Amino acid sequence: MGISSYPLQNGLGNKNTHKGDDMVRSLATLYANLKKEPLSLEEARAKQGAVVRERRAWWDTAIQAVYHCAYKNQSFTVDAVWECMREIGTADEVRNISDNRAMGRLMLDAKKYQWVISTGAYRASTEPTSHGNALTVWKSLIYRQPKKEKESA
Image (cartoon, rainbow, N blue to C red; front, side):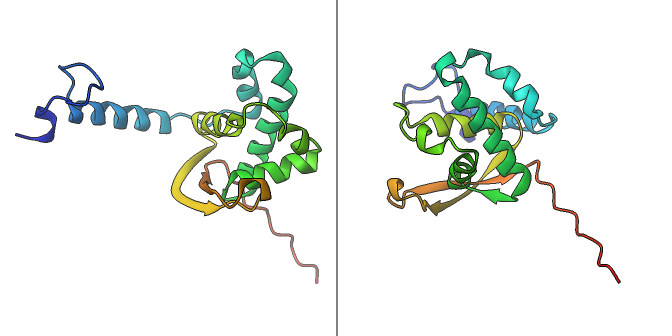
């Protein structure tokens, strides 16, 4: 018997669901999503219609910062996003939001928009308030290498 012939015993899924079937569906969904074109910044903003109004300004700034980091870096962590937001001038205000999981949601949205993908690697945070917690290293799918300036003779 292969792995797909054993029903799930942990209560996840129904009794007719098999581990192998779930894996095949997950891989098929992942592959289908990877074949899609990345969303533009404007398309991503349009998809955020359900974001609560009082967080709209934060979300717009944060999504812009993620897009900027993905466009300018081959790989990065959310520390780079916070730094970019600091340059824009809102990161300190954002740190005071009641739900600190907002950045995680933002990165999952960036993954859904085909801007980034997790590398599976982690780096210690450089933010003092994060106490060196492990952060996911994200690989950019929209990175554009800067063009080199031609040397003048």
